[in-house]
Image (cartoon, rainbow, N blue to C red):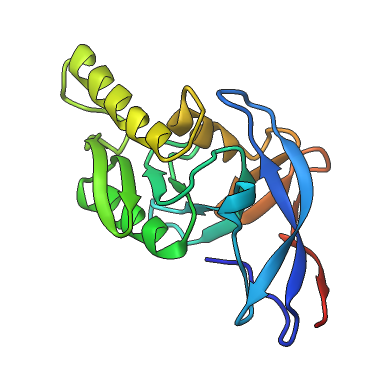
Length: 202
């Protein structure tokens, strides 16, 4: 899932999506990150997190990976089956293991919202009908979503709507950067761009 750098480098400049709470607009940043064992690492201390989209409709199995700033998670990961417009799986987190556990749990409950910390499911809301609808009465569903969002805020996120914000950010027409299962999209130039900008030798 992490972006890979050339052998022998220890730093890499990458494109980062700086998100805004509940807004279909973000800012494209370029940030230098550490490279370990050929992988570009997130930096939760600077709020640079792993961000991924997984195609879930059986068309190609693509996985798009990038970095995002703004969610503020100090640990763990969140994942959802709600994303605009494709409703692919989407996740953001501080590490790959928690991201994959969250994505796997979304699959297990046939869609929904999931929060994982240190490999453990700490909150979830099942949305099993196509991964976008629930049979629960609206008031009960809303209450469960609010409680799940509160857990996300306890992990450091200051957003009022963390899952909705995550769903908006994978809309590939959102300026300045979007993330699809095909990769990072420069919406202003209507093209896919690499996550890596440049790499630095030791």
